[in-house]
Length: 111
Length: 117
Image 1 (tube, rainbow over the protein chains, first blue to last red):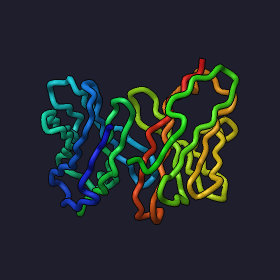
Image 2: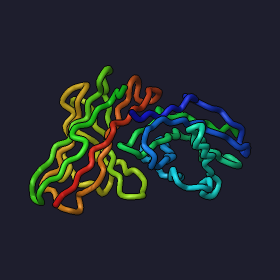
Image 3: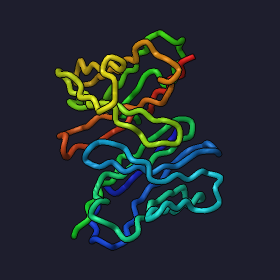
């Protein structure tokens, strides 16, 4: 069975600081993909970053990077130099046998 | 275990037919459910917000008559893709809020993959 765990229901971070959102996963599949999505109050799900299980390099997209530790089955999202607009819900997801989402982390950036 | 269940998880249909996808909250009542569509390697696109006992609120650009949403009970919302065509092939995902709409937890279904031949 697949499982995605996000242990931080909410986080408050000072503006301009870096923030790490935790995500651990469990799957028996050898090939899988890991995603992070941002969901602002509008409800839209915005794709942030993708990491394939066979990718050797950690994925990076602008201020977003994914700290992929395969042996530990973790895929933490790192946001550098946080901005007020980063306040949103963040979901980790895994695409293996099926698409599975974590329960999300509500990130609030404090001015 | 899953708290939001979608059925079917995979469906293949002929062009011109209609397909119904169910989204159920398994152990809680959900006044509000959401329907999303995901195109390959792209963001999840919010299609509509489904409210129990009232009409769904569709996002701009989503055809109401094409994608019929019915939230008949507090644990079930359905999405019907009417007269499906190959361009409707996609991954459809629902989510449901447990608790208040502003502070509740959001749970996702496991998605339904639609392939229209």
